[in-house]
Image (cartoon, rainbow, N blue to C red; front, side):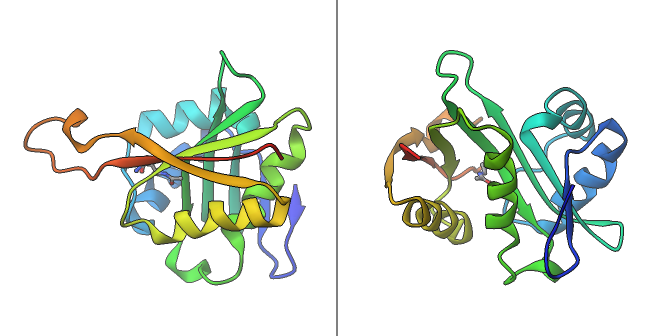
Length: 163
Ligand SMILES: CC(=O)NCC[C@H](N)C(=O)O
């Protein structure tokens, strides 16, 4: 568990956090809200590469990530969510630092980010600056990949490293 100066605590989540993480994602906005099951499963089976941030016991931030099986020096950051009440305090970066601090063998961080998600774009560019490395943006998932009738922006691929 890591404590920020603001009193926000960050820790590895467990299955019991999944439902509250799902509610946080619904409140955070701007992200794909997956099923409650997916957050329970992520917190349970992939908790080592996820971070839950809590203020006075309430979820205010969540990062889900997976190490890529074929490229195990790369951490794929799936979602970065921050509650509106916790914005502007560097929480997203603090959660990434917490995550990267757990695994020294991670050399690259990847994510897909939609053009409208300026906060995450700035976060990954800032991580690259902080680590003195490159943030490369390439084509990711085209809008056409998503089901017809479900409008979804394209997702550009961000790759930061070598850390
Ligand atoms: C880094 C990040 O939060 N990406 C979001 C990917 C996607 N739009 C989702 O919400 O899962």
